[in-house]
Amino acid sequence: MNNKIIVTNINKIGDPVILLEDNVYYMYTTCCGGRPFHVYTSLDCKTFTDMGECLHIEDTFADRDIWAPEVIKYQGKFYMFYSGRSDSDGLMHVQIAV
Image (cartoon, rainbow, N blue to C red; front, side, top):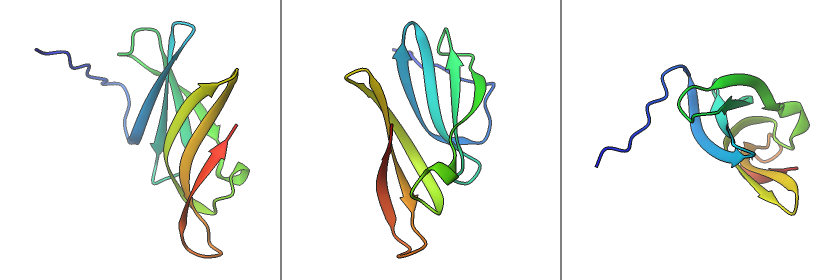
């Protein structure tokens, strides 16, 4: 069975997660060395448009190295879970943005 989808118009991303909402696919990604997160949209889940940054590092508790966004919808709100490094202890912490 061959059910692969090849997305060819996006470069330099990692950790993609896709959320379907109102017939639009939203793909959240790590970009460019762990900052910032970008969101892409698509109607067919093959060709995506970069909508820009969706979470700025200045709006997080992390000082650097934000990675691996995961987005869920719960009770009408969207929650993004991600990892981020704190300079105060040098450790990665799980963080949540609403």
